[in-house]
Length: 149
Image 1 (cartoon, one colour):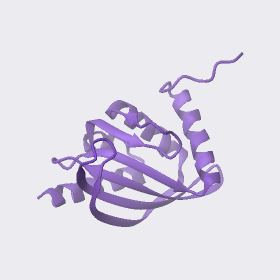
Image 2 (cartoon, one colour):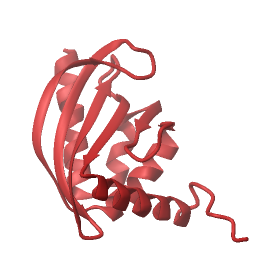
Image 3 (cartoon, one colour):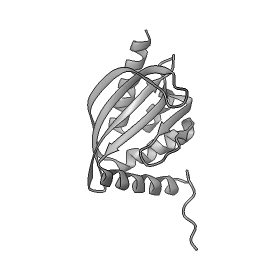
Image 4 (cartoon, one colour):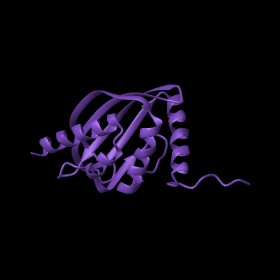
């Protein structure tokens, strides 16, 4: 039964991201979701912050598409316990830079996403993505901007 729930969540997640439907993501995440970003060591924590980040990402990525899908189990970063997991491979463009990446979705017992890890390559794309996301987070008031001296 758990596999059915995670497969359904994965499909709903994939559809929402590919269609840019931010509101459809909310009930797919646990309240205390953690998102591990390739450009920040500490995770983004909690549904409101992660949804805010997804709002920025959906605006930032151009020509975003998933190109592969793998299922299994893996230890989570937060508690080290094994959890049902899905890897979605993606391709996109950010500010003219081609990005190859993966989204690692890890699920709770109810089939909701409790941990989300993003990995991208190459380094030039990581830098472009990091700057675009930071600019979007600042613009949306989710993180403070740089203080002018």
